[in-house]
Image (cartoon, rainbow, N blue to C red):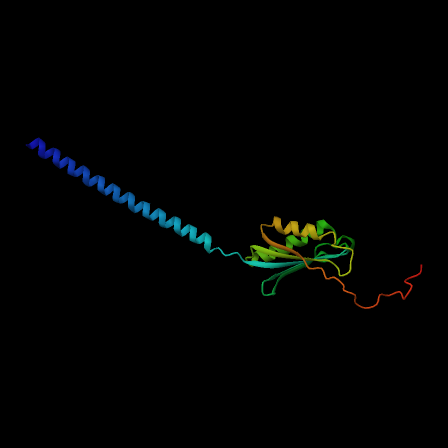
Length: 170
């Protein structure tokens, strides 16, 4: 009987140890899942702060103006602020640096997404050479581009053109 009692005691001790181990594992598992849930909720809590980037590109210059959704200016940079040479203000390379400088200021305010509104000169030939470079540069600056919209104003009749009835005679 002594042997049987010893075996019973050993079995009960082993059962107790196994139960403690399983309880510890359950506690650790519960802690891990709660940490994972907290991680997921923190990812979901990261709200995307959106802003509007107005890109006005003419044949002579490129402007990038970033505002929040209420219309308050966050940053405004033009080609003349980046280069000394007047002839280079509309250049795509300068437009890229203009967009980069405006993006840095916007990132300081916590902006992560952009609505882009491009615009050319009213009644002009089309977009200036810097518009596409500025849009591409903003997308490379890790902003999520939500929408790109062309807001160029179109003349609808308007006042009589200069030059008279028969036009300008050369």
